[in-house]
Image 1 (tube, rainbow, N blue to C red):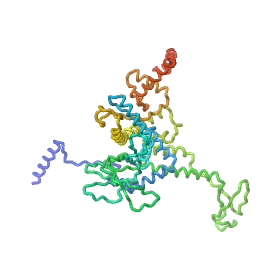
Image 2 (tube, rainbow, N blue to C red; image 1 turned 135 degrees about the vertical axis):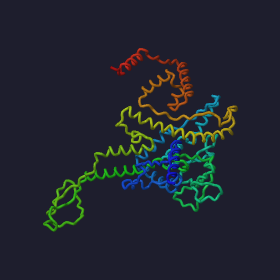
Image 3 (cartoon, rainbow, N blue to C red; image 1 turned 180 degrees about the vertical axis):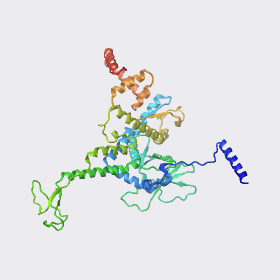
Image 4 (cartoon, rainbow, N blue to C red; image 1 turned 90 degrees about the vertical axis):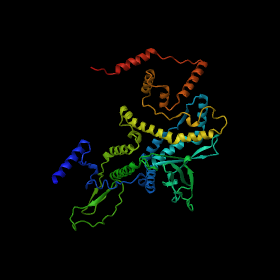
Length: 486
């Protein structure tokens, strides 16, 4: 009987191995999954909470308050937040329509730019970007502002994250609320609950009133780090303990330097306990004057306090800490610290590549989540103004367009100009691409240049042609400076 069972088992194992389904169980061990006395405290706060539970209202409130406090009191934190907003937004985006009617494109672009200046679109976008870094998220409500000097009365009203909250639980059947945001079954935002007053206002407001704003009128900007995440957390959250550490270390270094600079000391005696020494009051303070010799009590000596703090490593510690702080924002150290003294040309360019790529990702996200929605709302009102939009351009939603941002200045303009000329000569780039690198519209720039040349011709101003011999000498010198293989 036992032999028969063994044969059946052996036959099943053979079939399983031949079909690729082995009956054996293999266990793999990960060091990071092991809990030992050494790493128990390090991983004590690791949990399996969902994105909604991990980013609860209380957690986000604590992170927001601490992040705002650090940005308000830490010069490096404030500079990093301002630099990031200025680099991403700059002087503001510029619209370029790409429909078949060039005159209509330019007319609409000019009107949109005039409206953007009236509502301070660039300034509000910079505020949104700073709020995203400090608060984790930013909100803007599309409203009607009759005080605008433009024909289009669209405006953006910025609100802080605390004002988007539900003060009472929803009882509507089938609704799914996430702290001020009502979602449908597919996870799309349906409406936002906006408190009429800020919870942190000093003026006491009886009761809590809020407005139900449709999702089509609300712009919610934040970075989604986890699937199912509906609210944002400050982007500098990983750096908050480091900011606190940086300030503590700076204060400790200052205290050590002050202790070394002050004439401070202690009285001590070599006499044994109850020995022959004058009686002094323990922990008593003695005020010392400058240029004054003092006599000590009998049997007592004075020793000056010495700063044992390793102030020599202060600069290196700050550099490494700032480098780690700026890493969560994809910002290089020389940008975060506004100090490139330890960089050469190649390393500076290499570090900036990751930073500029991150900026382009941010700008693309802003175009999709913010600017395109603003443009659609603006065009909806522009339709009501006679003569602004030209008939026959097709549905507004199908109008091709693009956004231009400020370009980044090159460290060596001469080298960049030479590279640009080489790319254009070899047909590996276009004027549109080259002007887009500088955040400019190639068509507008060429029209401007054509007008300048025409005016110069009318005024009798002639450009001096380039000296072929001089350019040839430059090329020969460049060729001689290139090292050749032995």
